[in-house]
Image (cartoon, rainbow, N blue to C red):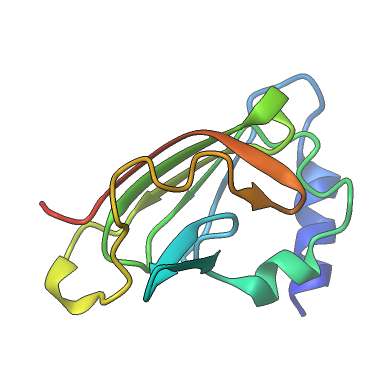
Length: 120
């Protein structure tokens, strides 16, 4: 199901233009649990094809209860913005610090800059 949805996204994204993908669950977001970092939605990431995000400039999501901004090295992946800033006390997967995931690899690409805040 998700792979087909991502094929449609790739088909309608205009090369050389600003294309923003918005959906509920973070596509490239990262969370922390007991000191270990993991992709927020592994299932969605597995549905991506190699070229799905090639014309996407940024992705915007909610779902997890914090703000997170991620910029990837050489812009190899789109900027990831997670704006699920309601109900932060409900989310147990808090980051050790705001920039803890810089250098972590997501889909083989290191995070160049990161900011996560779960206190609003």
